[in-house]
Length: 606
Image 1 (cartoon, helix red, strand yellow):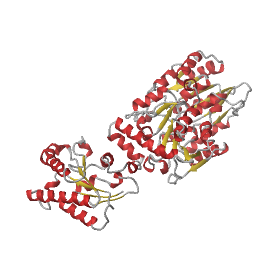
Image 2 (cartoon, one colour; image 1 turned 30 degrees about the vertical axis):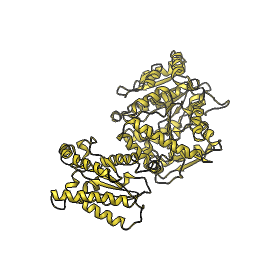
Image 3 (tube, helix red, strand yellow; image 1 turned 45 degrees about the vertical axis):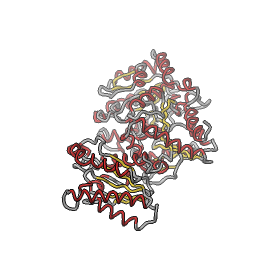
């Protein structure tokens, strides 16, 4: 698309080429302070005098509300006549040169809006209506949108935060009025559509995205080979090999895993995760430089919602809906986090998949535009428990052949500082010394410590460990015990399946461990933030004890796990059957559900 913009200083400040058209368009903003309509006409005459007919696709004629009264000196009736004639000549010039003129009426701050509407805007609208009878042009009238006072830098200029959103709305109107063709509109970035989702009503937005997704699907169906990418920054969030293999073994798909070095992890963590994937024979590409370019994909399946932790190739401003997005929730939604449900992936994914119907409904309610393309598929990594291999094991460190096997999984959200973040569940800071000493004096128990990937950062940042090295020394002390070891990364299903119980204060594990049908001891704290309905229903049939009640923890371990006295077992099974047994509810595994939901549409089989 080739276009240019003219207008006064308010046009220069408020219309930004970066946000108006897709990457690859050729536009220029010639607006300037003190530019009257007569000057704008002169600029246009010079431009059209240098190019051939039809070379310019459209022209944005920026109109400040008082544009007809502006002059080189002061406001005057003489200026009105000159500007009126200039506007008419400008419209005719554009049409005669094969360009679509678009008159854009800009807003002003609320303090002067009523006065400007009566004095300037209403007469301007009447004049433009008369000109429409003569010339073929479009009007984008932004004046009456309810822009709050705090969005303005001054009476006529938006602040830097508001400019992108005003331009997002401008682009949408250009598309609606057929100035910006549909194919060009589809090339706007996901970041653009994310901002648009806040600017128009949700039904209009969701219908628009459906239309865009249908266009992308139509193109992909014609391809012989469709490139599918799984993207994550932690092996711990891996969805499981079964789903990957369903795509990899289908000749229509070229399947790759992109493992990004997250801003939240160390290079050593990334390399360890990379080796895990390679060891299992998966086609994985390590993206260890956050600025590294990656090959374009037809579809990206994100396994975490935090796109800002990934390399720039997978950021919302670097991708367009010509690459479809899908999202598989990396865990079960047992807790609530403010604003979390309106992240860009939840608003713009072509399809999103969740662990249960309760979670799907929760996101649909809390995402402000709803989630009409969300499904309760179940978690693919939990398929393991419905179809466990005949032979599987985990090398627990056993000092006795009949030792009970317990997992301790501490969460990262320690100290009161995380309460304001809406994430206060961790008790590690209260009991990390006790848990180690307890393991030392109980050789009849074999332990696996599975810390959250962010626990090191949190423990050091909160001051409980003086350095990362000090935290690593603590974990090494566990590894040095004859009956304990530390496990990080993904593929923890075998650990779950071979364990006898779980002690933790983590979040997704509240639901995930239910697939083992074994007892769970949940460590609580007085100031913890809320749990979801799913989380509460599971915790109501689980064993709970304060994370700093050491005697209470020891007593529950002895009674429930060592002695096997588990009076809540039947109640847990009932909750599982009702809420989490997705294979019974859907009639298939989560991997099969997700694969068919995606593949059948991409290949045209549905």
